[in-house]
Amino acid sequence: MILKAEPDKALRFLEDNFELFRGLYRDQLEHSIISREAFERLTLDKADVVVKRLLDYKLLIAQPNGFRINEPVRGFLAFLLNEYKPLLPEELTKYRQAFRELFERMQDLNGQDILILAERLDAFYQELQEFLEHVERNTGQLLRSSQHLKANKGEMAYAERVRQARHLIEYYIEPLNRILDVKKKASIANLLNQVSAYVNVQRFSHPHSGIRLRFERLHELLRESEGRILRQSHVVTRELLPLIERLQTESEILSGWLYFLERPFLHEVPDMPARRLFTVTGSNLEAGLHLFLQQFERRPEEVILKTEEARPVNARRVFFDRRHYLQALQQSLPLDNYFSWCYQAMNEHEEEAATERFLRISSLLFEESDQFEAAFGAGRFQIQLGEAAFDLPIIAVKPKPAEAEMQSN
Amino acid sequence: MNTNPAVQPASYPAQHQEVVEALLVDGRFLLEGDPAFMALKQHLGFYQEFFRQSFGLALEYHSEYAFLQSSRDTDPLSRDICIFLGVLCYELDREGYNLLEQLSFHTLEFEQVEQFFELSSFREVLEATSNLQDAQARRNFYNRLHRRRIIEKVDDQTFRFTPAHKYFLQFARGVARYNQRMAEEEE
Image 1 (cartoon, rainbow over the protein chains, first blue to last red):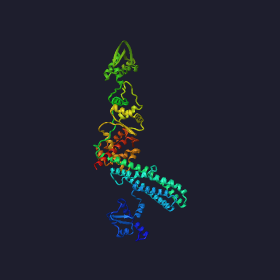
Image 2 (image 1 turned 120 degrees about the vertical axis):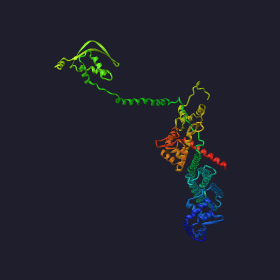
Image 3 (image 1 turned 30 degrees about the vertical axis):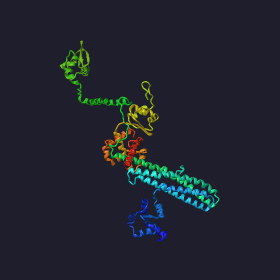
Image 4 (image 1 turned 90 degrees about the horizontal axis):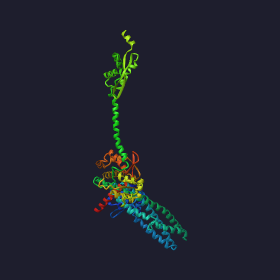
C-alpha cells in the first residue's frame, strides 16, 4: 500500500519516468535483480527526488544486494512493454499439479459443501486463465527470440548460434510441445480435456444453480482454451520448431564453411565424381571425329578463294590484233600454203601459241573473201598445236585481180 | 556375380548406357527426375556391384542425387566448389537471405552472385583460386558446374542449384560438427 501518495499520482510518476522504468525493467529481466551499480548508472541523470519517490511509492523495493521492481508493477510493465523472459516449462508444469489437485477435490466434494466447491471452481477458472496467458506469452517470446537469433541481431558467431538454438529447442520448445500436445497422456492439454468432459456433464446435472453457473462459465473457458492451446501448439510445431531447426542447420553449415575457408587449400574436400574419357568407345566418337576433320576440309577452300581473286591481276590477256594480221597477210601475198603462213605469223607475233588464236587467224581469209582469191592445192599437211592436231588442206592465196588492177592503176 | 559374359550374355537395365555415361564418362550427378536416376534407383544393388566390380568405384546414392566417387585423393574441382559455395553461403546469410530456402527453391542471378564475389571479404581466398579469381574464370566455372549438374542454367542471366548442392552442404555440416566435438573435448 502506498502511504505517501495518491494512487493516480503514483501512476503519473510512472508515466513521467517511463524511460527510467523501462531501463530498470530490462535490467531486472536480464539479471533477476537490479544491482546497486546498475541502479546508480540508470538514475545518474535523475534528480534525487525521483530516486526517493521510487522507493517512497514502493514502486521499487530495496533488497540486501540491490533492488527489485515491486511484483505488481513488474507485471504491469511486462504487459506494457511486451517483453518477458520465456518461462521454463518446469514453471508451467506447476499448473498441471494445481489443475489435477483442484479437479480431484471437485469430484470428491460433489454436492456436499457448496461453498468450497464454488471457491475451487473459481480458483480453477483463475488458474486456467493464468496458464493460458503464460503459454501464449511464452510461445510469443520464444518465437521472437528465435527470430532474433535467426536475424543474428546480436552478431554472434555461428557456433554460438547453433548452441543457443539447441538450448532453446532442448529446454524450452520441446518441453513446451509436450505440455501442449493433447495426444500425450501426461500433457496439461490432455488433463484439461478430461476436466472438460466432467464439467460438461456437471453444468447440467449439478443440483445447485449457482454451481451450475460456475460450471457453465468454466466449461466455456475450457472450450475456448482448447482452441487457444491448439493454436499455440501449432505455432510451436509449424513455426517455432522448423524455424529453430533451420536456424541450427544453417548456422552449422555456415560455421562449417567458415572453418573450411580459414584454410581452404589445406582442408580436406569431399570426394567428387570425376570425368573419365574413354578413347575408343562412346556414342559421340563419330561425331567428334567428323568435327575434327571438318577443320581441315575448310582450309583448301580458303586458299582457292585467294588464288581466284589473284588471277585476273596476274593474267595478261592479249587481245587478238586483227588489223596486224590482215596487213601481214596482204604484204605476204601471194602465198602457196595459207595455213602454214598462219602458223608462222602466229608464232612470230604471239607469245603463246593457242588453238583459239590459230583459228581466228585462219578465218581471216574467209572473212575478207572479197580481197583474196583462194585455190586448193594438191595434198594435205598437219600442224600440232598443244593437244590438238590439225589436218589441213594446202591452199594458195593471191590478191583478187580487180584489186590488183586497181593497185597497179 | 561370377557369370561369364562370354558364356551367358548379361542383361542390362533399359537405361544402362545413360547411367554409365552420366556417372562414369561425364562424371556428373544423376538427379531425381532423370530417367536414368529412376533406372539406377530400381537396380541400385546391381549398379553398386557393377561399378565396384568393373571399376573399383563406390556409388554414392542419396534420395535426391547419386554419383560415383572418384577415389582420387584430391580433386581440384571439389575444392573450387567448396570455396565457391562457402563464400556464397556466407554472403547470402550476410545479406539476410534464408540460406537453405534460397539454395533449394529459388533462382539466383549470375549478376548478383558476381557482385557478391566482387565485394566479398574473402577476396584473398578467391584470388588464390584460379578458377574463381575473376569474372571470366567464374564464367567457365559456372559452365563446369552446369555440366556436372550442380547448377542448372535457367537462361543466360539466372540459374538454380540442383539437389546435388546438398552434398556439399552436408560436408560443411560435418566440418562444423567435427570442430565442435574437438572444441568440446578440449574443454
